[in-house]
Length: 163
Image (cartoon, rainbow, N blue to C red):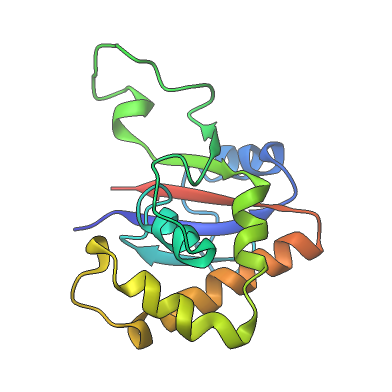
């Protein structure tokens, strides 16, 4: 099983924390009435795969820091050295990060006419080996749309990841 990711928009990290507390960390996109506008995906982690998309949009080489974030759950920065146990949220997840506005704005700025070209560049990355640009166009379209709605409403993008 791969990494499951939920990308969603929210007014702020406090709103996200309130929903996560109410749902005991479950996806804010679950159920008949999701708490936030968003999309669910598999294998689209925020650092490498989404980072590759941002690099494809910007037409720059991918870098580990291309997508900056702030931890929402667990709160605070990840400890550099600690004993991992079954109750440690850093070991077990789920993890939620707030993506900085630069990522939202980069995605929101993709013109509809450029989606096929961006998807083709993204599909050429090592992490997406075996797919083509046409396969990735729906993902680019929904991420761009989500980012546009977030920017229009003064919200940020968030990513919830679990194994």
